[in-house]
Image (cartoon, rainbow, N blue to C red; front, side, top):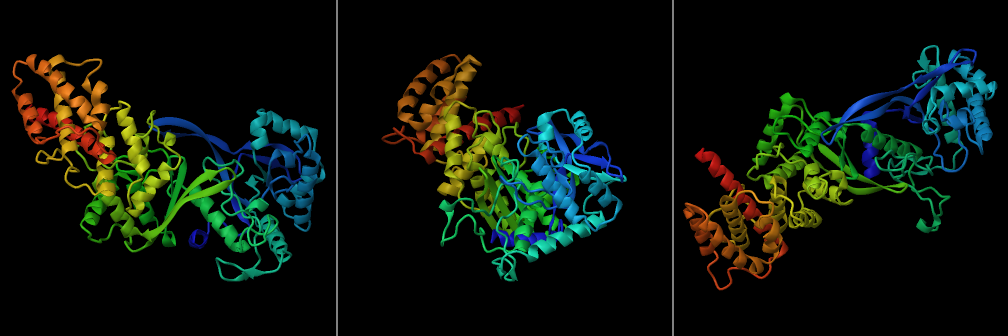
Length: 584
């Protein structure tokens, strides 16, 4: 299903023809028509991106459409018109001469009957063999040995790169590619296209963030221990034809390189696209997934979903979807099929976290419900109108970096948002751990707890946006009472290095009976220091009255009740600030 969807994506977009590939190239070898190396042209430049709210400098490489190289493992396999220094200059202590000869033989055979200026220059350059002067020119241009060993070179003749746009070179390569396919093994029925075609034994590499530099495999068999039905690693990985194998790898790599079609979720990568290459739906889902800034801007470095003038439209789509009203949003089609694929690097392979196919309208509805679940009274410090998933992930870590979140959590969280299912329990547990460790209960933590209580525990009574003063839910009332006692201490003694929240909150949240009798005794001393303690005495009395039974303070609170306790505490604290602002 995943392969079929990606093949459909390739057919909708046609990023490159079969047999070709977009490759990031570092340098160009500038040749004369006689095959003399005139110099090395750098194709890299420094760029600045925003990452985590900070500027980061990165090196960009020029992308060119070049012949698709064979998958390399341990053997010698030359690539046409684009290769590294070990093949082009023999810069390999063990097999440099063999690599150069393989590259020379490949180019001379393909270009044997081609007489264009670029073809003659390349043939003359290879025919002359490795020149010490050429090696010195390259080493002078790229003195860093590590950079030189990893760099890809393309040929440059008469002011133009030798790539897909060179018609004579293109024709020569396509003739070679088609003739090679004719000599492959017998035809079989492709599981993707349903046509009799040439099978592909080794599929192309996927360039995934966090994966191997050479790329990882989505479809592969590389050991007999993974074999089934009597097949070994010498057999093809699946009954997929050359066209389908090329199409799905090309489409996926194109999505991974497109900043409009990918987002990084912790250590995972999420790619998404609309059917028929429709961009409005893709932009809307990408923008809503990433959250809206309250000031109308976007805070993440790898994706800018919509122009600022379109933020009203995003708000409009959220509002109307909540009311189940389908409507025209630019050129969005609410019934258009939409795809989301979450991937994770795993050694030399690509792991699929989830693959979800739905309609644009259903995904928007699920996103709206998710943001409704997160809505809570603001602490006036959170800059997002809708909390992005990466902000939520960052709250589960010590250093507040989403990339440090538990490896599986990012994909699980996004999957629950997109599908409208229960949130991962690990998210809830991680937030409670950070709270018990003494971290501040901010808007994000409280919003996550509220959302999990609604979705996972079907809680409705205490999961209001603001303070619920009518409920008698015991954990919620206890959380409110703790906030009142904390505020009483602050009013009596001012700011302290250690207050009751630092010393008692974790115990009060889990084992109220062990803490609250002590806190109430301490509150009597705090009350005695106030000139007018009426408000706090009244608040304590009203809250204790809601607990008036045989056991006002439970010995333990369950995990969901601990969330209700924290929510009551947060609501009560924010009500203090709201009342203060109103009185002013």
